[in-house]
Image (tube, rainbow, N blue to C red; front, side, top):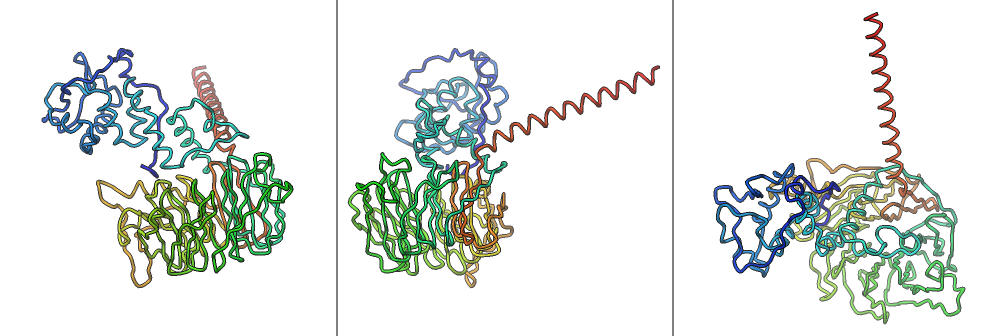
Length: 540
């Protein structure tokens, strides 16, 4: 269900509410469930009451969704299969108990639930079931993190998961709107790593000058910086509880969040009680870091990924690769990584490699993945960005390919549905992953014409997927990029950090549309006035 285009209507209930008049009966669980589908209707359910069709303007869509759900229902434990085996003509869909309707609705995606909730008040209540919408939300964006400094709909108490989902989905359009670009100066060497922490309103940057800097996201001013760490810092990972940096000296440095520190992490060592922890064990430069709720992950040119416990800092697992490790991203119980020209999928609980596939010509420098773990996205030395379905075999897993750059892709960032890449040509490319997955299955078949050239180790598609937006970031190489719901941050060879702020994009678009409507109305009035004047002169 993740990475699917969810265009949910916020319209009020449909004409069915007028028919039912909010008098939906309270349902009990009968011993025998009435049948609802006629054999002569090919499974299409027509909801009617008192001889009147009450499906309103949504009859065709609702019928197709209900028909689709019955064609895909599996025996889940409650007697849905036995209910459907007693089908006879003339029964009503509403005669089913709510638990059976909920089981049917569980096979629909968020867009279909949004449409079917407009049919009647009962459907609206059932389609708003919090468990389903929580699953939709977490599959796309993970659990929301409370933001004390900037409360919004994602942090206000009492909001349902459906409201959270719709608000987040609406904000996805912001990255196609107008933006304000800020430039952060202070680094004396190339910036190799940037990370956003939107809940704390902070940006973390580091690079060749060996100094970790923390910036205020809104003001664009530095709030703290570390001493010189004596190495090229190539990787930064951060969440609300821990900050980790690593680089050429093969040491992972950690700071725990301090509630007394206004910027969470005392990297400058102002507080005597603050402690910097160092993790050793790698024998080569560390190129990538990752964090989740239980573990810290570090990848190195020693061809391994080490898994560390967050609480005890113990090295609990080593994942051995066949080449230098370039990038990693944890996704649930799995870790996605790239080494050499290959992409790997690992099971952290067992330590076993699930899958490895050749993905690029040359080195595969970047990797990202959906929160559900279904899709793996890579960028490489050949300038291509490729998306793979990680549920299928290596030979048939390619979903999409973009060719947005004329040089190597060094970094990827993903905030569903937006995928952003940073390249050696100095530009950033924005790609809509929903469009790729929407084309994936048409009538159960792969719509993409994909062939794999074994000689060149590359994919040959009839047409590459479209890049939605290009941001000309630097005149030199862009090494790193990160993306939030309304901001993109990037760093590179020019020693500056650039921030694209889309936080006011939706409001600006509303004002532009309102101004455009006013101009069109005034133009129409002028035309009508001119026509009336011409008519009066002709009659006079």
